[in-house]
Image (cartoon, rainbow, N blue to C red):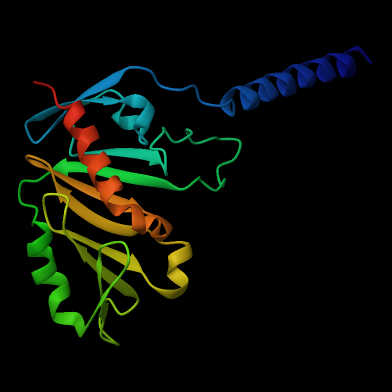
Length: 211
């Protein structure tokens, strides 16, 4: 009888320890403070950790890329991933990937190399100041739509999903910022706000540059 009681006691202790470990592991992550000092292709940036999406980048140092996320339309920090809700739907947001521009083509070079030969002849002006171009059927981009605009200091070219893909896939564009390549991904629902999105992304990166 004493052995049974002792065994039960040990089992309860083990269960309690496992439960404590479980609840400790799934507690909500705390917001990251301060800035990470990173070097991307010889360019120094002080990036707010609160905006970084990859915890492996929090320590800074020499990195190939930095991943940023900002909510739309207010450009606030995106809530950190929750271990309690790993499949939770994120609010509308802008994903910004910062890389070195070394060896990366410009928007116009990318247009000529990847998109131009597959485009249909028709063009359509849309109300947000962009020109809409569709791709020919049975080409690599026939499920996408290309929008071209100007007015942000450089040619703006954004590739967006068409049809059913509009609900789940982002629009993608790339900008240059003095030696850096900025890849922007955002929902097609915010396409009308393309000028503000592109200017805010370049403004933030300029603020993070270390003299």
